Image 1: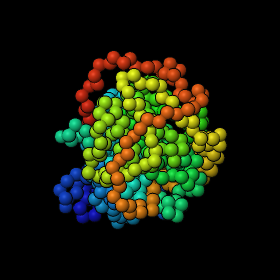
Image 2: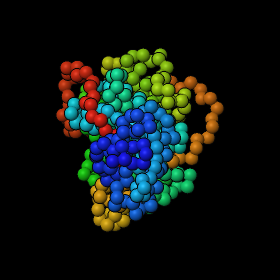
Image 3: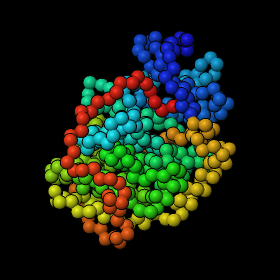
Image 4: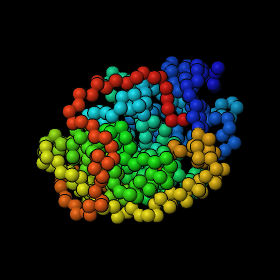
Length: 421
């Protein structure tokens, strides 16, 4: 079947909540591509058509090797909009974790670097991905040991106007287990720090094969966040060094002002944590990916542990932003969204404006003078009540013995596909 004069559809690849994807041959480029069509039942929704177009535009603007490449955006003779994008070979991070379990610190670090590079490049352009999760992180099969692409930038939200005209007011956008607290309640504080939280949850999942907060609904997860900080990764995998624990606790700070301000600052702090864990405090952290600009400074100081191998217990700050109203707000938002969707809670069956995957547009960043070298991250003792400490590993999860065989060589299962329906 031909679409226009250049695309020959070969076979269906998959179907999601709003789109269907086909493998096609691009006759002009003489290469296989993926073609994503808006599903027929959504053709009568202007919001759905606008979302598809803005998804393509957001991904095309970023121009990062770690973002799926967009070749074209067109409409068929029958009025069906579609996106032509690169066809990826590999598997999603979710599939890889399901098959292999937790990843080594080295592999997790490489995934964080590459996903963070894509997210940081998006932040430079005023775009925040609101649905970073293992399903949207694709491990591409290449000659390199590991290469990552971020999928599905979804809807672009104009924060300058503080309004998403493509999303019903009060609707929750994102995947519950990876949503930041401010996303859960749809607050106006959604921004680059929200992506820091979601990337932190992805890193936690990679290291431990578990989630920092669990629950069967957004409200249940919000209640878990209200109860206190999660167990540090080392409570589940003892081999994880203390500096990485501390970095994780900052990324998962419920108060967005207490997190790393954006992906770039998060990556710089991550490299510093790894350097401290190796005992190489003199190393200046650098971001190897060409997508990432020089780091910005931050007033936030992370309590990294500097004396190894004895690692003191993690004592995170008391969360001043957490409040009993978080879970109540989430329940209220859920009722509004459920009413708008006619009672459906499935993102794949909901009307287009309630789709779970989206991105948002921030106002262009204000040009700044050349930043000074990154500050030395110092240890700062924290005084907190005992109740604010995370529960012991014996009460939260079964600890993995410290003496473990080395992880198997990293390998990606070859699957020709494109995700992010």
